[in-house]
Structures are given as structure tokens and as C-alpha cells.
Image (tube, rainbow, N blue to C red; front, side, top):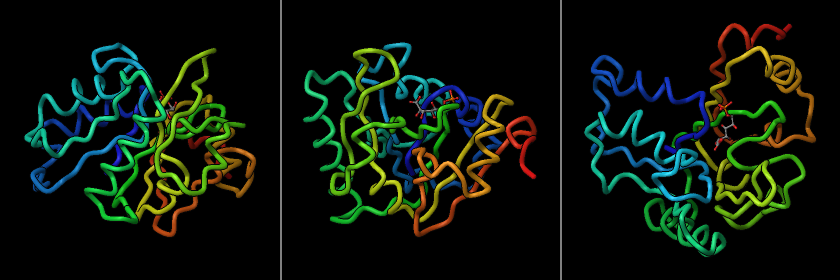
Amino acid sequence: MALAGGATPRRTYQRLAEPDGHEGVPWERVLLFFGDERCVPPDHPDSNHRMVREALLARLPVPAANVFRMAGEAQDPDQAAAAYEAELRQELGPAPRLDLVLLGMGADGHVASLFPGSPALAESRRLVCAAAGPRPGERRLTLTLPAINAAAGVLFLVTGEDKAGLVAEVLAGGRSDLPVARVRPDGEVHWLLDRAAASRIR
Ligand code: 6PG
């Protein structure tokens, strides 16, 4: 599966790491990838890998060889993206089909590090690319829509009143202009919402 970054999934990862949170999961057979990463070193406070390491990996018997970190520290994000794509193809075959992609959603409708208006949204061939982050000069690495939409399943994890309006619009089939509405895998899409984020769904 590919893991999401940001703040929302931290609690999910912490629960998953608790003894009653992962009964029966054959972690030695689970490969963990990342949906995106900030272009910072892995010990940087903004690093998604650091958040996942602290909330999940430090407390779970996932073999280190099963965790595939995006090299946010790389001097050349384009090269780091290409290297990660090669890892995906190495592990999952020439046409990688992730079993599950966990995604958050920004209040602006971004998913992974695919932000509204990003040229990365037009990527139709590469599975991983470098992209601009929300802050000036900020760089990210992200799965592209082809990689996400090839997945067998996508699970959105969204909380908070501030996202309720957009959740309702997207679930009603609107906002096709936004990255979140372009996540349309052949597989299943599930939304895991708290009451606040679901409060505007009719
Ligand atoms: C990231 C995430 C990003 C996140 C959304 C929502 O690297 O920040 O991958 O796509 O899922 O920004 O973030 P919150 O869950 O913190 O609201």
C-alpha cells in the first residue's frame, strides 16, 4: 500500500500500531510505499517518512526491506522521482497496481502532492514526479494520477469541518477541476470521514 502524509493519518497509524490495531496483518508480506514526500531530509519535521516512522514503523514488525522511502533529501527531485518509479516497477512489475492507496485531501482539493493547477496533473506516463508544494519554492515528490488510478483501491481519510463543503461537492460528482475529483481508479474508492467532514453530505 501507499501511505498518506500530512496530519490526519498520524492518529490512524498510531492506532494501527497498537496491539489490537493490526491483529492478523502479515506485515512480512506488506510492502509500504509513500504517496508523496516533501523535499526535505528524513529527519526534518515536515518529512512524511518521519511522521510514519514515529507513528507506525517504530512500533510495528514491518521488515525494513518492505518500506520504500521517497528520497526527499535528493538534490535533484526529478532524478529521485525517476528512481522511486523504478523501485515501484521493480517491486510491482512493469505496470504497478497498488492494492491500496491511502490519501488525505487538502481543503483546496489536493491529493498527495498534486495541487490544483499543477503541471503534474497532466502527467500521463510517469508514475512518480517532482511537483511544486504550496509554499513558494517548496518541492515535493508525488505519485501521479496514472499511478493512483491504477490502484485496486483508494481510501480517503478526511476529517474536519473545513473540508465538509468540498467533500459534499466531490461526492455529489462536482469539482471535476480539482485533483481530488480526478482520483477515479478502476478499483474501489472508499471515504473514511469524521462527522464534521461528512456534515454537509445530503
Ligand atoms: C502531505 C499529504 C497531503 C495531505 C493533505 C491533507 O504530504 O501533506 O500527502 O496530501 O494528505 O495535505 O493533509 P491533512 O491530513 O494534514 O489535512
